[in-house]
Image (cartoon, rainbow, N blue to C red; front, side, top):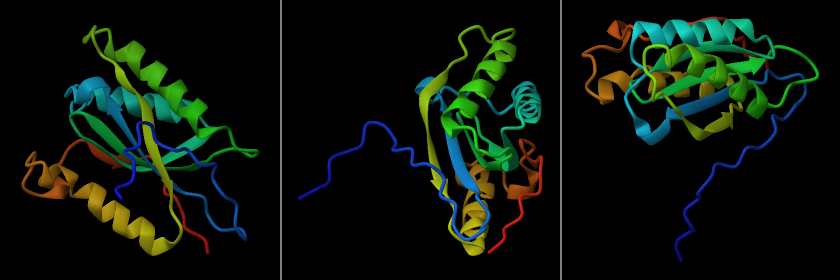
Length: 157
């Protein structure tokens, strides 16, 4: 019997485990998967919003036309709820984006997964970094201009 299709992602709280790093892999999409994001204006607005908020810190990220993949870690303890942090920076980016794109909107929810070990991080980053190539937006992952790393997230086992 097939499993029912999930309408909304399940957001499980990050789990503290024996002083291991807490690193989350997050995907956020635009409403209707409209291609508003792969441009310098959006990248600068995202970077500004992420740097203003210290509740969670952003490590590596890739911005595609209609969605973002990023890795983040708690910036303060006790941790702020991830949903609140994402709502904060989505609001900040929306304000900036609507100056040039009045219809700009985010999809209501997001997807998140807590990484369990260092090789999980490496595997996810390889997948994320090659996304622009898979979508035929560039010939080589390193040539995609809408990616970066704001903070070096360290994995500690």
